[in-house]
Structures are given as structure tokens and as C-alpha cells.
Amino acid sequence: MAEPTFRYHPHPLASGSALRIDHVCSVCGMARQIRYQGPVYGRQPDSLCLHCIHSGAASSALSISGGSDGDSDVAAMFSDAVDVPDDVPLSVVEEITQRTPGFAGWQQEAWLYHCGDGAAFLGPAGYRELEAHPEALAMLREDHQRYGWSPTDTEQFLRGLDRTGEPTAYLFRCLHCDTNLASWDVG
Image (cartoon, rainbow, N blue to C red; front, side, top):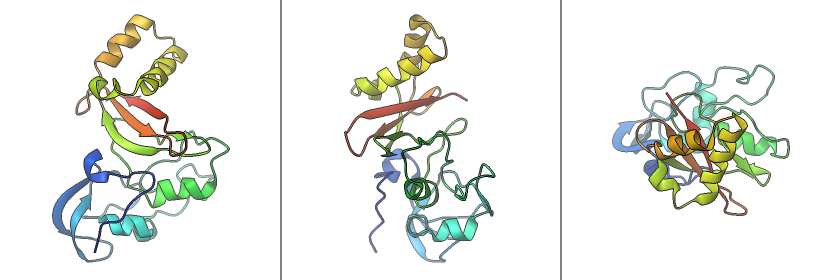
């Protein structure tokens, strides 16, 4: 059986959210070759396959009742639903939080949104990876400007971004206009 594809996380192996290894999924009991290794906001499985994430079976089986913020009907399983713009439909938030592999961050990872939709998560990135995406770097600069960072401190921080270390950036792409987006995180 072919591995499922995810609109909002097209390459979970390349992004580091999944690992190619033989395992038996704790949810479906099937022998699988790719195991999810990202966050789960619910009961922790010994092993989880991408098929169970894609179908929603993992969300149903592992969910702790209620939304992550106490007010939402969305039970976030693989990514928390924070800072979601008002123009993003609930169905998109549910797909991202309940049926899309998440990604591990140093603190609380947050999904990015653009053009009234979720953006596709491409993976962690350092400065070298972001150089090819000037609009993503510009987004990080604007973020630091809002926090009152000086241009010198911002550039020093950005040049220190490390794909496998910290601080780290997370690269996304808008599914509609192809704009590259980024967020950042430190341990």
C-alpha cells in the first residue's frame, strides 16, 4: 500500500517528521515501513503510522476530549491551532491539527497560514536554506522588527539559524500564491 500524501505537509520524511523504519502501528496494528516521529497532543502511542494520521484514526484513538484551548471544538493532535486567521475555514484547521503530520520545534510550533488557507510545511531551515527564499527571510525580519530588535541583532540572529540546531527556522509555502513563509524558534 502506497504511503498517503498530505496537502499541508507534502514530505514528512524529508522534513524529519517521519522515519523510514519497520514498525507495527499502535493504532491500526499493521506492519508499516514509515513511522511518524512528530508531536502528539493526546495519549502517546508506542508507534504511529502515516496512514492512521491521514485517515483521522489516530486522532480519534489518541484524542483527549475537548480542544487544546478549552473553547474550540477542534482537538489538536499533531499541531496546535494557534494564531489562525479568521478567513481560514474550520475544515482546514481540522485537517492540519487532526489529519496532517506535525513537526517538532524547540518550543510550541505553530502552523503558518496564507491566502485564507494553511501553508505547506517544507521543513526546518537554517540561514543557508532560507537564502533561496528572500520573502521568508523578510518575514523573519519583520517579525523581529515587531519585537523591537535592532537590524544588526536581527541579521546576527538570522545568520545563526541552523536547520539541525538552534535557533531554527521553519519553512512553509503558500498553496495558492507560492509565497515562502517562515517562523523561528529557540530552545
